[in-house]
Structures are given as C-alpha cells and as structure tokens.
Image (cartoon, rainbow, N blue to C red; front, top):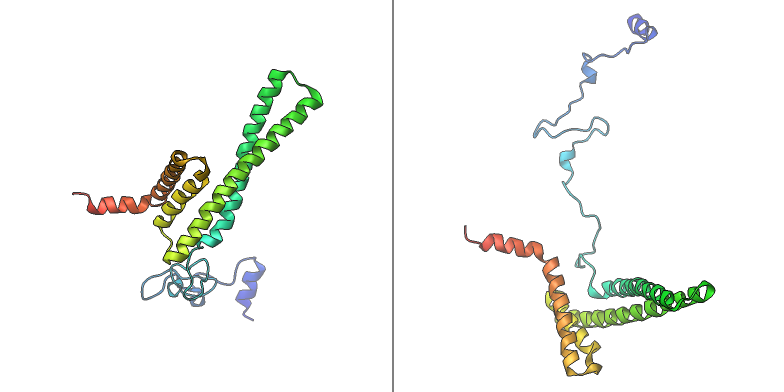
Amino acid sequence: MDSSINDRNANGSSPYSYRDPGMNVPLHSQHNLAPLSPYLNFDPVYLPPSQPEFIFPEGAARQRGRFELAFSQIGGSVMTGALVGGTVGMYNGIKSTTLAGHTGKLRRTQLLNYLMKQGSATANTLGVIAVMYSSFGVILSYARGVDDELNTLTAATCTGLLYKSSAGLRKCALGGGIGLGIAAAYCLWTSRDQIQNFRSEYSPA
C-alpha cells in the first residue's frame, strides 16, 4: 500500500479528495439535466411522474358503486342518528329532571331513559331513510347503467315520498320536496368545480 496513504490515514484525514477522478459522480443526467441519485445510481427521469395508488382490474370502475357505498351510508346514518338523538335526549332529560326535582339514582335512571329512547328513535329514523335512499340508488344505477347526479336526485325524491306516504298527500309531497332539495344541494356542492370551470369557459371576456 502506498506510504502516503498510510501517512494520511494515520493523521486522521481521508485518503480521498475532491480531485480524485473516481469520486466525480454526476449530479445531473446528460440529456435533460434531470437530477441523479448518488445513492441508488439511477436516473429518476425514467420513472413515470405519478403512479395510481391502487391497481384496478381491466374494465373495472375506478370508484365504488352505490351498492358498496350503501353499507357505509347506512351505518354512518345510524351512528349519526344515535349521536344526535342521544345528545338531544340527554338535554331534555336534564331539563325535565331538574324541573321535577329528581336527584340521585332516580335522576340517573331518568337520564338514561331519555338518552336511550331518543337516541334509538333518531338512529332508527335515519337508518330507515338511508336504507330507502340506498335501495333506490342501487335500483336506478343498475336500471340505467350509469351512476350520475340524476340518480341521486331521483333516489332522494322517491325516498322522501315513500317515507311520508302514510301521512297524507300533502306531507308526502313535502317529504319529496325536502329530499329533492337536500339532494340538489349535495349535487351542487360535489360539482362545484365543474360549475366554476363551466362559468369560466362560457363567461364573457
């Protein structure tokens, strides 16, 4: 081994320097100056700029259909109803027991009764509405062969009509109108980017 290298090693300095031609690792590729990785020794330009997060089978849809979304929608509606109903029931229970002057175990029992009764009733109501809406959405999606905003509007309107169908014609129409209004607001919110692009494209200069 070279004595000069041994001397430099003994002094604690590195035997290599920036002037060593073997240490000249290029930082950029030659054809388009893309940065090179000095550790993995490959040119990132050969990698595609973006990759999909999931691999979809050929011919499969890139988003879940209404049937797959129905389970999460029904479960979420039930849990939301239980939470909202339980909160309202607890508030009403505290108010009623305070006015009645209940204390101790009697008051705790009454609070639990209010909480469970109101929570279960609201959860049942929202769960039934979610089942109706999901059923109409799945049927329309399979019947029309497409899943779009029209299915959402029709399913919500039919859900309101069916839910209030036993309360008379006037309330039935009111339920359908409420369902249509909620669905229209949802469609406008989810399609706000398309609406903005449409306005910017056709707006006068």
